[in-house]
Length: 317
Image (spheres, helix red, strand yellow):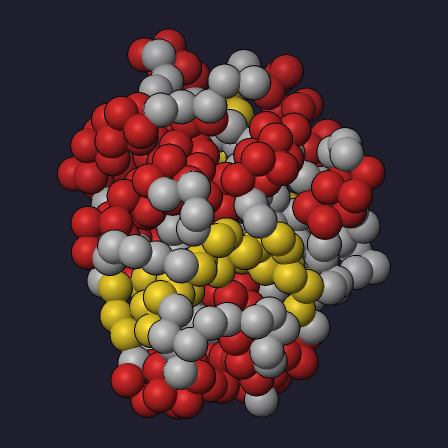
């Protein structure tokens, strides 16, 4: 398959920048001293709707034809993409239908509704429900991850980082369906092929690891394999994202539920921010010495979102 060039990513960044936040990059001297590295945290939890997802959603919506915008859009999501599409579609005056699992977080369901999306809860296969809506209502799908426009939108994060941070050694990015790590890893590798890209997956939701092992897109039972990192609980990997991960990601590291909880605690105490479990997962390999990192290495930790409600935090702790 053909991968975009750096110019296409820059054009995407220019196109979406009026509608999104330029999120901060921060560091922690106490953390660096503790682990003897030079770590930086990209705080995408301060993005519109609380996660990186609006970048891809906005880019996809901007690429639609006038007729597609008029007819409306549909998507599937357990939370962050749902909120992003709902917000972005309302921004451009487009009707959206959001198919969400019936056991999705109430706070994420309510947030999605508050942004203007029409939420459809289901206990059935979300993609099947979505396809029926597309067939019936002629809506356009804004895929959570397996779409080139979405992937290029997420890649804009790396361009922001590279404006402030050079000579990066290691990058840690969480994986659900793979849209975020696809766009970000590609841009980093275009800038410097020697940058090591580590994908982080929960043990209880490792569909990308399974797909890499089999060499094909795999499905995953998200009903019986529950993870606190609900935004990483992709029911399948993407055909497009699998190709990106094969080519641009150096390794995938699996993390446990307990390790993510401990990471959330650590980040709250040290960085004074509240990440969702999917974001805290990225720090686990460092906290638990899962890989060997050279002294004073420059590491980028992707804090991808902060959509976790107070009740969920109470249950974790």
